[in-house]
Image (cartoon, one colour):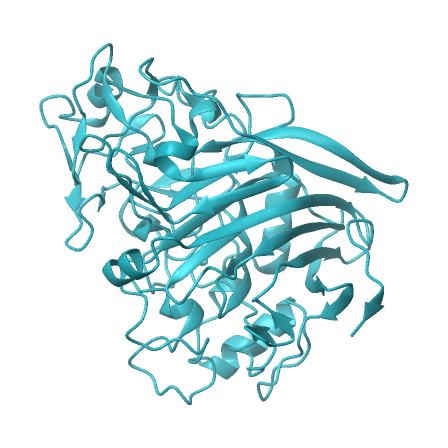
Length: 460
């Protein structure tokens, strides 16, 4: 998810965050069903979703005093990370009233701005294992496909309704970190390939040391600690542009880091491939494929199918290709072919990524950090957790998804144009004001053997 550090935190009585468990608000996970499919058919799985810990109110253990106010820690309660963990607890969530998160059967809606007692912006949730309130569902996608329906019609420039996998601990880190008594039930343990430093709690302790309040986000900041792991972006999108992007890392599972061990924005160092190897049809030179009124018409819902092909077509083989298919109005729509000189095909492979990086003049950090094989290994170790979110971008205004980026390059150069949004779009203050009612809807999630999760009456 790029860039995760810009996710907007929520203000609740001058917001605060933590990893012990409070009792001021009951935690009840909204139910969400999904289906597991084989050639014999699909079976329904009764799961739920949980809100990420970074959005939650945290206060003193047994009290109501905030441990974090605005974008600063209370130094008397949190002089260091361990003391902070001893003093502070995080509480349950009012999913619909405070965060604009609602579910119904197999459908999940994430609203962008919610005006409850206070203003909330964005959210990030995880899928729980069926029948569990203490473990995330994990997926091994090798030689499998992952399918969902999505409605992005109410997501304009500057917003991102994302669905992706990260290699976080299924229990949220409880087993590894004794100070984390909240675990997956309270949405702890997040990590991604950006090695985000904006998480208030990492490895069960407060990210207090070196905490620097953001100069353009009144609720966010960054600490010395980052939290890294492999990330597979199935879907980063709004109504204008979309991208599918693997981000391999050289570490296994959720791993904290400091200094040069962490990846930094725009850096080729660190342990993770921040840039990833993305397939955005507009960026690959096909400007009429995705968007309002285009081949994949974002004015209406559609189905997104992602297939993870292995070299020997087995669930233990080496990941060799990531394939995208769309279904809309009963019609199968194959991913557009690249129209960039020197880059061929419509699948993400090591060869595709190498050619794309050369054509765009980018360093091939994807290959350096493990490439397709590394991404596949992340799935095969312990599986990867499913994340769904809606967010705006305080770091780069989402221009990397839907406009020209970076701004210091000619927009006509290969790889710079990613969508039709203006380079002045996506300013968080503007988006939060003009598009407060924006939302994304994910539904009909299916996971299973290749060819078993979708049907269509015709193809294109």
